[in-house]
Amino acid sequence: MTRNSIEVRPLGPVIGAEIHGLDLAAGIDSAVFEVIHQALLDHLVVFLPDQHIGPGEHLVLARQFGDIEPPHPVFGNVAGLPEVTIIEQHGDGSLYNDVWHTDVTFRERPAMASILHCQVTPPGGGGDTLWSSLYASYEALSPGVRDMIEDLTAIHDYYMSFGPSVLAGEGGIQQLARDIVELPPVEHPVVRTHPETGRKGLFVNRTFTKEIKGLSRIESDHILRMLCEFAEHPNYQVRRSWKPRDLAIWDNRCTMHLASSDFSGHRMMHRVTVIGDRPFH
Ligand code: SIN
Image 1: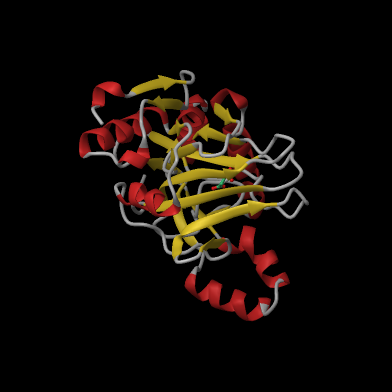
Image 2: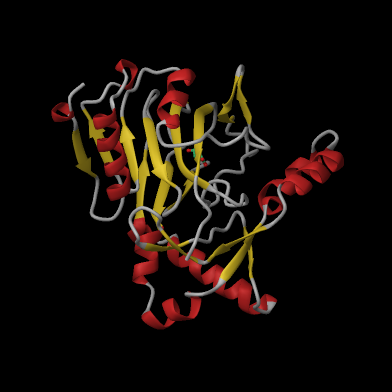
């Protein structure tokens, strides 16, 4: 496949682009990969409609970005391919993906990119995914607030989102005890510098960011709530309605996302997550 057949169509000035003229099933060479990579750096989330690939090819694509995350501590995975996470919901309220988050910020080296391949869409529609640019929200803060948060560090904790559901499962206490040893709380800067673009962005989210170090509980709660609310404004977002086989790649170093839980019936995605660097300010 030549670079010339590929078209990157921005979906707006802030975040999101569609890439057309690409058939991942035919394989991609390094020049084509570089087009995808550059589009990701420029647009933060890119959509590749109608990709007829299986979980193995999904994994091959993800490996071009870097090393793959170990199996997710809570979500299930594809048989024989533990790195391909299944994100599956039945529209029955048992969801924990409809709160804004950046993938696995509870790890010391959180995800660099995630690649989602749509398998099943809910029969009555809904189940869109929304992404928000953390560059745009950081840049829109008033200079005084940017100064105030510039050197802060926050604690991200696996327990915040997954603890209660793990605890409620069979053997929950033992499982949680193992998870807490393997995934203790970690510290990340509140303002992160992107290692490739050099741009700064917010790096907090409602799902995993527990507190800001060195502040009182009241200060930490209010500042975190303010930053999260600010970053969740529609000004910085793109929203995607899915069709089966659509594929999305996003940069977790400068975005957060959520899946809308407005549907009933079955929705299923495959996700592969690429390990990132240690966030720095
Ligand atoms: C995710 O939160 O990583 C998956 C989002 C989705 O299922 O749309």
